[in-house]
Image 1: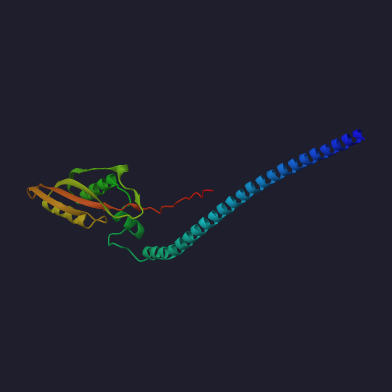
Image 2: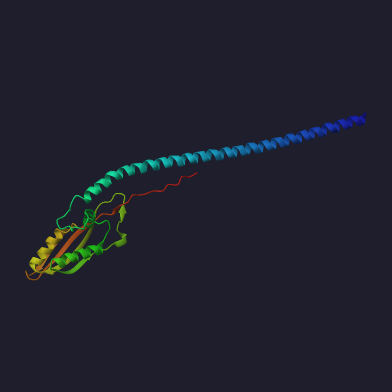
Length: 220
C-alpha cells in the first residue's frame, strides 16, 4: 500500500516537473517571439518612415525640376531672338554672334591678360605706342561664380605715347570699344608731335551665375 502511494507521488511529481518544463519552454519561446516581433515592428516602422522621407524629398526635387524646365522655355526663346535680331554694334563682324559680343562686353571671368591684349590692340590700331600697362592680376583668387552675380571692377593704369591726333584716336577707340572702359583720370604731357597720356581707368567683369545644384542625403 505504502509502495503504491510512493509510486503515485513520484508519478505526480514527474508530471508536475514535466508540466513546469513545458510551461517554461512555452514562456521562453513566447518571450523570444514577442521580442522578435517588437524588433521587426520597429524595423518596419523605421523603414516606413525612411521611405516616406525619400518620397517627400523626391516630390520636392520633382517640383523644383518642373519649375526650372518651365522657366527655361522663355529664356531659350529670348536667347534665340537675341541671336537673330541683327548686329548689336556697327563694327560687329558678320561671323560674330550677338551672344559672343555680349560676352566680350562683360566677360564672366577676371581676365587680366586678355584685357592687356585688348588694350595693346587698341594702341596698335590707333598708331600709339603702349609704354606701360599696370594692374593687379588676382587670377584664381577672383570670384568666378555666384548665386547672385554683380559686375566687379578691374582697375588698371596705362601710358601711351604718340602724336596728338593718334592719342586722341586711341581715347576715342577706347571709348567705342566693345568692352566698356571708364576713364577715371587723364594726364597729358609733351608736345603735339610726341604726346604722352597717363590714363587711370577701370572695366568690369561679372562672375558666372552659380546654379547651386544641391545633393541631399535622406537619413534613416
